[in-house]
Image (cartoon, rainbow, N blue to C red; front, side, top):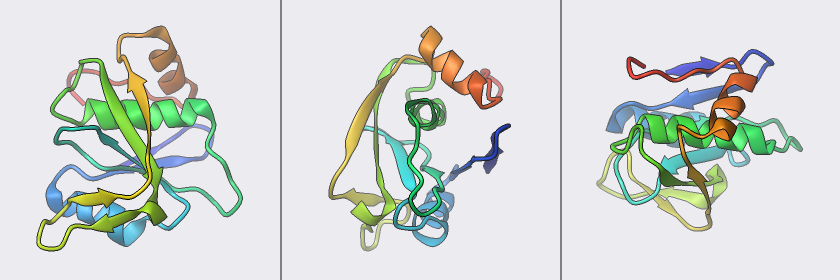
Length: 130
């Protein structure tokens, strides 16, 4: 699944193990950012970045909010990890699983104003039917 944002960037999202494998290990490049719920199952979300481009705090929060929304903890407050694609390895024999060598985390509260504002800034609004 693709989320094209109103100001240009887009997010790629895997909804199954095969989809997660594809967006993370076939489509993502080394400097792209990868997001996933910490300590739980969920979708892999990738933010493609151009060479030398940095993600704003709002883009990071939007990516983390998407990862949380498409996870087992949808609607809950939770920690989401993110990393550069270059810091990930596929787990042999486990489709859609990633071994993360270096990560950062962000705490996401989907009901918080900051999360809603970050999503709205890019034309995203998550509902229970997404």
